[in-house]
Amino acid sequence: MRCTFDSVEARRVWEVGSALLLASMTLARSADAQQVPRGLALDRFEPSPAGDTMLGVPDPTVANGVRPSLGIMGVYSRDPLLLVYEDDHSELGKVVTYQLNLHAMAALDFGSIAKLHVDVPFMASQDGNAPVLNGTQAAAPDSAVMGDVRTGLRFALVQQRAWVPSIAVNANVWFPSGNDNSFTGSGSTRYALELITGADHNAYLWRIALGRRFGHDASSLAGMVASDATLSAGAAVRFGPAWVGPELHGSTSSGNGIDAFGRSSTQFETLLTAGARLGSFTFGAGAGGGLTRGIGTPSFRGLLTIAFSPEVNWASAAAEREQQSVERKREQENRARQAAENATRAPVLVREHPTVGGAIDTDGDGVPDDVDECPTIVGPRTGPRPGCPLDTDGDGIPDIDDRCPTVPGVPNDNPALHGCPADTDGDGIIDAEDACPTERGVRTNDPKTHGCPEAVRIVGTQIVISDTILFATAQDAIAPESDGLLLQIVHVLEDHPEIARVAVDGHTDNVGLESNNLALSRRRAVAVVRWLVAHGIDERRLEARGFGPRRPLVSNDTPEGRSRNRRVEFQILRRTPLGASDWKDGGVAE
Image (cartoon, rainbow, N blue to C red; front, side, top):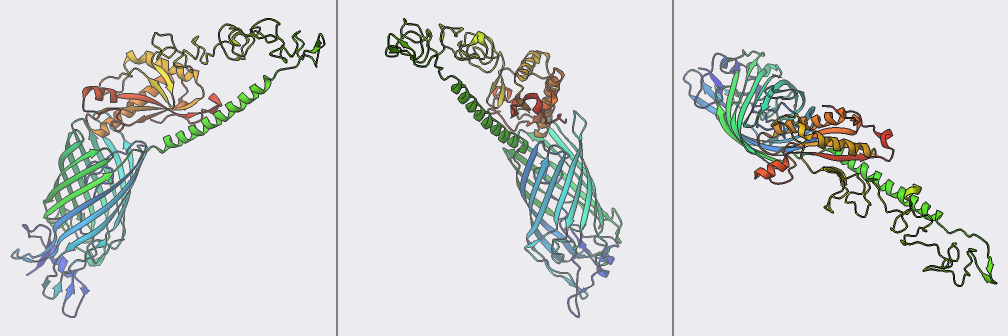
């Protein structure tokens, strides 16, 4: 009569490999009993890194920009390890009746290139029996212990384009931080390599991950634990921000006295999973059970998870701080320049105490000081203010020097405009009437747009466009109707060399899969950058970013709202008083 481990209570037959199991039970507990060796991490389920879409199948992509993610997952497993007789299939006892694992996860995505992730598992609760057969005792598990910490690094190799799927590689390392006497640790370092592919389409998504997980060949675990070939696959249907679909997880062990694809060495289970993304939070749940009888495959498994993954762009934050510093410096320079100009406007004495009829006439204009309202400035005897220069418009600039003597104006280094109303942008519309005094514009009958560019103007840290840049449906090809609008943006950048860096940001509505929308918004932003560079804008001044549906202007609940959210924006990241000599950020990587 022989006994073996089984993972599904309804199926209790193993092949000849069960005999090797009893032969390896060598840890002595007493003179007449032996203990089953427990140097293995029993749970076969590996959660996807924080921020990924599916529960157990990793994404083949990396988020755009810099995105931190935090998550926690609870995993319940029933009957992951049984001891049964092989001869009559009767149950000797449940070594592990259930396990409740908690996974604390964190990840950091870097600019669509790499993702660093870590998973810290903790066995919150588990229970089991200690069946004895012919003096051999299986050990009951301990609860509340830590598992083997997993760290990983994913690299995105190919980005999805139309029907060509995304491809990534991932490397994992498990450190022996678990308790190898409580079925939560292997007692040695393990590592794995994975090739991941998948695609996100408007109504559905799919993922496949193939890998090789390398274990150890301790003699005490011969016939039970070895290296694995792993497979994870999943697909889901999208319903707005929610999704639902199946996942399949499996592996087969080989080496260390184990043959691949045997009944006892093959583990497969299936799960029905669902999830939803609400803002920066993702919620998920799943349930299913084992299809085979490999060690660690439960008769039932249940999952619950929540993750937080906001969009953060550290480069933009740094650029904003730099912009604020530049603006403070410019304000200080303007104050110093104004003080210097005021100092040069001090009146000059023409003569030193001349007299008229015995009365003092300081400025020598023939008007005694006791009558002269401007005793230090030469002026005529007649006029509204005797002795003061005529200043018909009262702007402080004498008519003799004022090129617009009947209209109040300001000093100007250009003699032809000295004393005329200010026209900062030189568009022929004075600042007092110009709704956009720093941007060349056109005359209109609307005071709110008079003097403004037809469709493009600078407002704070944005280049605001009043029209929409049009693209072919679900593509990144710019419609010819938008060429005129883009040409106005070119003129604005040419007129403002102090704008050293502009982010071209693509946005979409929330229709379809988020990752698909992210990719589309990125491609559209790159297309706009290419158009501007082709029409003379230095590529060092531009960068492309895609945010998909993550930054809506209004609600996506109506067609009008979704139309407004499909847009391209221009954010001014950096200004410089040095102009073109300080365009130093470099080209834009696709």
